[in-house]
Image 1 (spheres, rainbow, N blue to C red):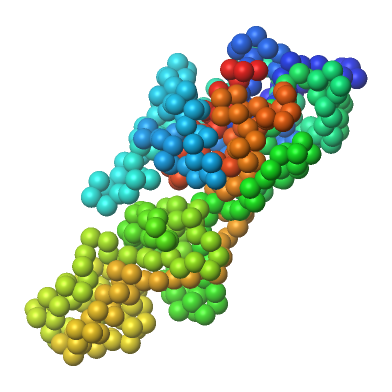
Image 2 (cartoon, helix red, strand yellow):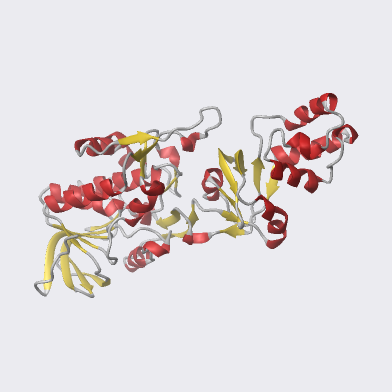
Length: 412
């Protein structure tokens, strides 16, 4: 990795980008390509850690079905301009130019939900994307300053920005904040971007963990601890939003794609409803089983459709683990509800430690949707996860990073 050397009091650039993640690297590449002098300042010793760990090391870099409906924001129209101007096909074209092979994730069409469809991964390694971004930044004259912590930012009277760091002072005409959100602090997430936004008078939509496993209280955990490791296809709902994907029981609560998706819509105190057999009307099925297999014990009947441990849990939880012939219609309805509409009130989430994204962030009402410049401070831009735009699971957050970085660069 080439790191910019400190040779003078002020290192002057046309554009400085703080943060060497997906959005920052894309913005630096496209800005340098336009002939502007550009530098990235990164407080860690490595670039693009989220890219590196994404998709099991193969990076779920976009989704071919990406659209504005795949994003949450207090200002849902904000993302439309960038997503239209830089599409998944545009990023795929960049990979094709570098001969980086990729594939769409295979899924079972009979059970897969929307999040499973259209996910693209590298055939080989996420490192290929990181190398592409780094090479293109540097090939076009951009510099990457690693292990450099910004200590102070000042807007000077002539309009330039002055940055004090622990490795010298910098100045630039345009400053881009691409420092990300708060998710996964072990790879360097911090509140730097939010503090900078506040310094320049921008509103912050309170951040919270998104795309994150949900946790149970001790009482519910005691009941479900024996289910840890079981995974099923499920439809999970919260208020008026539903996702059908895989669900995983954990030693803390629930995880899996369906739970990660719904976690971005769940708020403390809300109930989530889990349908463990979304293709079946369990009440009608149980009535038919009562006719055809009257002597069978309930948990044995349920194990025809569900993993045995989960079947035993439901039979015990409802208190109806007897011969199915001995169960009235009312009791069959109780069992059916425990399967088709299991209501759970999570205690909370696993938080930023395991969250794949950050909800909330810099209020997009303060930002231009075309240039990503703040409306109050000329030359100051915000891109990527730091903004109040959060994608669904399945490559949408990376597409937002590419699109916001690319679009911002066109105005720098």
